[in-house]
Amino acid sequence: MTTEEKEIFVIDHKKESDVVITLAGNPNVGKSSVFNELTGLRQHTGNWPGKTVDLAQGRTEFEGQGFILVDLPGTYSLSAHSAEEEIARDFIQSNESQATIVVCDATSLERNLNLVLQIMQLTPNVIVCVNLLDEAKKKKIHINLEKLQELLGVPVVGTSAVKKQGLDTLMEKTKGVIDGDITSNPFMMEALQQIHADKETETLAIVDRASVIAKEVTIFEDKNFDLKDQKLDKLLTQKSTGIPIMILLLMLIFWFTIEGADGPSDFLADNFDKFGNWLMVITTSWGIPHIIRDVLINGVYKVLSTVVAVMLPPMAIFFPLFTLLEDFGYLPRVAFNLDKHFQKAGACGKQALTMCMGFGCNAAGVVGARIIDSPRERLIAIITNNFVPCNGRFPILITVITVFFTGGAVGLLGSIKSAAFLTGVILLGVFTTIFVSRLLSKTILEGIPSSFTLELPPYRKPQVGQVIVRSIFDRTLFVLWRAIIVAAPAGLIIWVLANVSIGDQSILQSVTGFIDPFARLMGLDGTILMAFILGLPANEIVIPIMIMGYMATGTITDFSSLDQFRQLLLSNGWTWLTAMNVILFTLYHWPCSTTLLTIYKETKSKKWTFASFIIPTIIGVGITMLTTAIAHLFHLV
Image 1 (cartoon, rainbow, N blue to C red):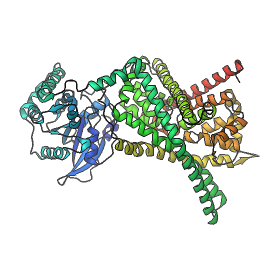
Image 2 (cartoon, one colour):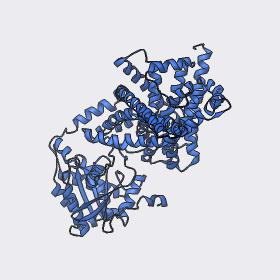
Image 3 (spheres, rainbow, N blue to C red):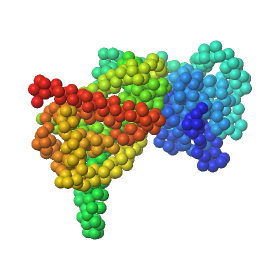
Image 4 (cartoon, rainbow, N blue to C red):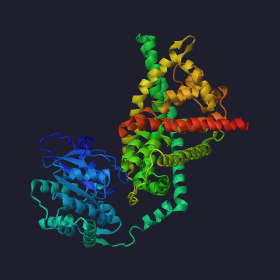
């Protein structure tokens, strides 16, 4: 192992007497739910394979003894063919781990027992946790836990983590194993070691034994227990209906986001503006110098309040809806539908999952690329993640689409048209992702596509309350806080550029005039291009900077109506071509600074970070120049 890999095995002991327990298991068995319920942490439990890619730690106490629980990545085996398998195997064998709880899914025990038997080959201190008994009961699947314990030779406990059932018994058995009061069957351990000694037949022997044990202890009262799942899969994954339903669901999510976020955004913007005016009055009465008031309120505060007002409402709607689909088990079906397209592009089907994560935040999509085993394919996923517009770019897209292309329709019809148009833009981003992935895999990242196991987990009724809490705290507020941290210094820089003059013009106006000829070749203008450049820290401030540039106000400005905004744009020479090129450049331009820093952190390479910056930028500049040239050639403007 490298030094970097060893660092993740550093355990945070609060007391010297704390003992370390490993939580292992296949993906989608509720392992992270067991972890959360025992430790009280809100570890994210995404319903797709390989979502947990690091070692999460948490502490709990039982009968006066402190326990450190380590949640391993979900894995199907310990053959070390992937980073997840290697991490799981090495930690279980390490001196830190004193016992291993292997979490199994009661509805598919046979598959899970393969991993149980492999872990028993590594350590005798194993406790088998048969989770999701509530789901098994609904499907009329019965597990004879006593017989399973007898056949395995290690303690077996039945649980339903989401209902907090069986967890005390699980900890009781675990403590018994660590204290030496409960020991494994030595004959079973010896038999597994003999299997391990014969490398040629080991895998087949483990699979056969798991199959025999599962058949001995499992009773299927209803042979068609998964008939509903099969019917849904036929609808959601077959060629003729899978992609259309995916597009329809995407449009529906965007419609809910657009329709629901408009009012709250206006409410926040109005109240932030009132609070800003109050701050100005108060600081004036306190005798604070004008320049300080101007910098802090018209500079930093205005940018921060704009970012919050623009980002918070759509994220508070988009993330819960997205998480509901995730918990329901739909996202693996998206990966299944897109897998063949990414395979043809020389990339990995798991890239579909990282692409979905990019909708919320491209930085999150970049981190999510850790689930891709191949370093080559992981780089492709990282470089192309920016082609999926993140939550910060949605306000630009929605505003321009509404003002110039669907503004004639009001109410429900208007929001539906906006959602449909936005869905079309998103699909263009998906097609670009696949195209650029293919281009990279045939040139600088050439190689053979890898294969991977993609489990289609059972459909599950989402825990709506948990979804709302988790998506608000784990995603919405996390992304918002990161944007605020970046936006605060950006507000200061923007204020300086807009208020410090060289000659009779501000620095902002001078730079805008300098880059204007190049921007015109792209069908834009200097103000628009400057707004994108200054929007590097956070895309949410692009529109406000644009308005500030057109009005030459020296401070971030907003409008009370889209009609006023449209008139401002038209008076500054905007046409349908300008609007189209703004949409295209929003889709195809450099990642924000947060994403670029995340890319560097993940790749440890300036070269690949620069590639992630320059590739979308070249495409953005090139495609806007092309559309402008074609429009002028055919006299369309």
